[in-house]
Length: 147
Image (cartoon, rainbow, N blue to C red; front, side, top):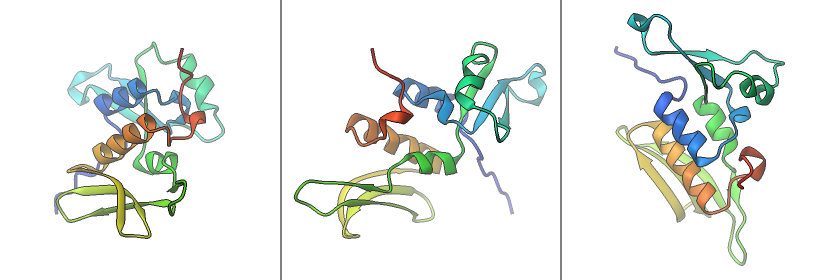
């Protein structure tokens, strides 16, 4: 068996989430620039329980630290249901066909409101978060204030 499980966003995915406006304090992990490149360009760490991530990142982000998100955290950020006027709620669903990952919001379990598809589960989640933000479905408390 050859497992290659990704446990947190990589540097490009993390930057994409920050560019979309996700607050660093929503991250549950961080990437630290490596001082020994032969072991990799970045090291992934979890944030210790009991630490305020918003404050922690505010004093460290310009020192080789970049927020990172576990897949569980990305799924936690997404609404479990989208309320629609004059229509049933569109409920969250995630599945895979063995090659691609699908994240969708469906009415009554079959009528598709929106779906994102990608080979990687993280990329699929990030694409859905982008759609949620652009369509005003993501909780505003997860986003930085826009000027």
